[in-house]
Amino acid sequence: MSLNTTEVIARTSEIVSPWKSKHGGLIPILQSIQGEFGYLPMEALKTVSKDLKIPEAEIYGVATFYAQFHLNPRGRHVVRVCRGTACHVRGSQKILDMVKEITGINENETTKDLRFTIEPVACLGACGLAPVMMVDDQTFGRLEPGKVREILEKFE
Image 1 (tube, rainbow, N blue to C red):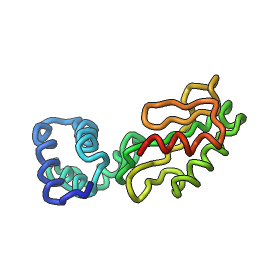
Image 2: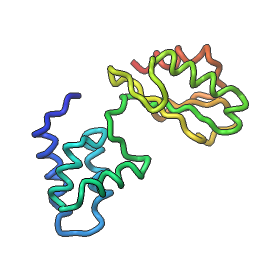
Image 3: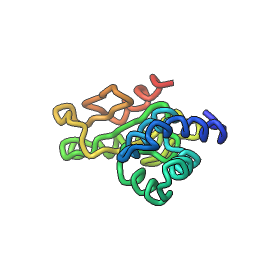
Image 4: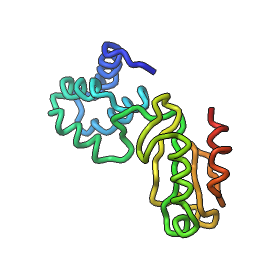
């Protein structure tokens, strides 16, 4: 989705408006902006700064401190590969390597067509199914590298 700068600024100002006279609204504002656009466009951060009279550096600091916020567009499908101990011992690195090979991107990157974002995680909490990968909210366990392509092809 190509974002029009004027639209980003206008929509961001609408999101900020109810918070102008309140304190403590920065995180909910950033959450709403990300909900609207899928990430935090720089134009939106500048608009928040101007509208709330908060330095851009402070807003950027909050946006980069919390892992929930993203400053770049993300793929329609987020692929999370577990790096926990059980998954690591059972070959999750080979799974991650296969995901990278198939998508042509590295960790924490997004494909040019915005189809996939690869996001390695510390633990997915499914140790009994190790190695584990999630695509969006679907969990795939007891993986072998040969199964990865078939799984990713389901997410056209």
